[in-house]
Amino acid sequence: MNGFRWISGLFLVIGMLFAVQSAAAHRPSFGDQQELTEIENIDISNAFYRQLGSPSQVDAYVFDAQAGERLHAGINIPALTGLEEYQVSVALFGPGLPEAGHDVLPEVHPEDLGALVFSPAVSEDFFEPFTQTRYWGRQQIDMDLPETGTYYLLVWSSEGKSGKYVLDVGEAEVFGPADLLRFPVWWLQARLYFGQGPVLALAGMLLLITAVAVITLRGGFTRLGKPRSQNEI
Image 1 (cartoon, rainbow, N blue to C red):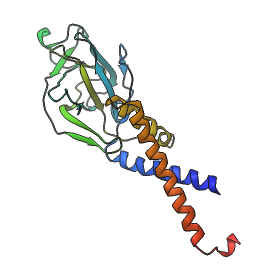
Image 2: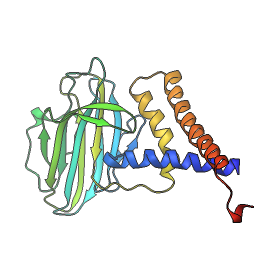
Image 3: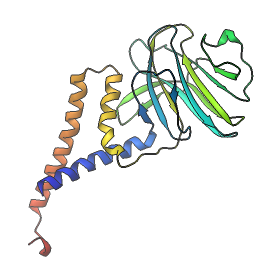
């Protein structure tokens, strides 16, 4: 029974975190930027935690969409010392978009496609309750795509400055049972992304485990204090 209570406590805590996360949930993606990151479905919410490490770096994301499909995307800057004024440029390339001047585009970009450039801007700040992290809002994209085809989102620093950013795409919050077990890992990755040392990040994980233990023990003490039912005798 002790093992059962421990497992129940674990899923109770993770379930609570799941409920909090679902309030403003994006499925996170961490790691180094690849040459081209594929977005499988622009309707499902995803958050790409990335870092521009060199002046010429251009992060590219690709997705397929139907004419009239809604694109919701945004840039957020992690609230870290030194990034208060940090901004990135964003461009959407695809069929049916107007031609853009090469002077406002990064040196490396898709050819023979129209483009919309979203210059650095300031939007509403954002607090993520699950990881207890704060972000400064930047560009927001909310538009219907003009034609069916392949589109590209490019992110770069027009000033050639290195820094971190988070690209979120989509609004539909889709999580499965297996994601309950991924939440602690995502929490740890987010804390490390924010520059928190491994020791402090792991200390946070221990607090999570402690919460599980407290709930489990309280459940055990409560059970001891109750008279057993006929079925338990």
